[in-house]
Length: 202
Image (cartoon, rainbow, N blue to C red; front, side):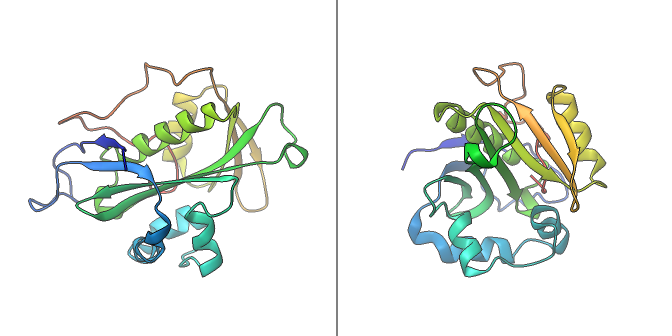
């Protein structure tokens, strides 16, 4: 299956000489549900907390959602040397349940701890956005923990038009999408250290 390839920036605390040079981004394969569960189980408590707002391991039903089993969910993985090192999903919101204008999709991204801050999260986000725009989506929706100032500052730096609301569990972020992905945003390339653009450890 074809996918996008991302070459992480070198160095960093999570770098090991045995790590492969690149990760491939592609849709989740139905047969890799067990591998997806292993990926989430291998995340640190902090990464799981940032992704799910609790240090939990996904239940079987949640894994089905994360694998893109429902028709309204687009699920992607970043794979390196046959191992999942990142996950992203976009759940399109039904218009009747979405108070905002246009069509929105709820996104979430998480990257294995050893691969964080190396461009994988940003590449996953770009792929999600491109696929969402092809479906006619006009806005991103995401939940962010209030104390995650680094992520909030990155979101507002790249998307100054993002609307920030409050919910009982955190902050509701809504980002209007342009007709095409802005070319000025960073894209990972060989030797380039690219910080992720999205929350939840990506």
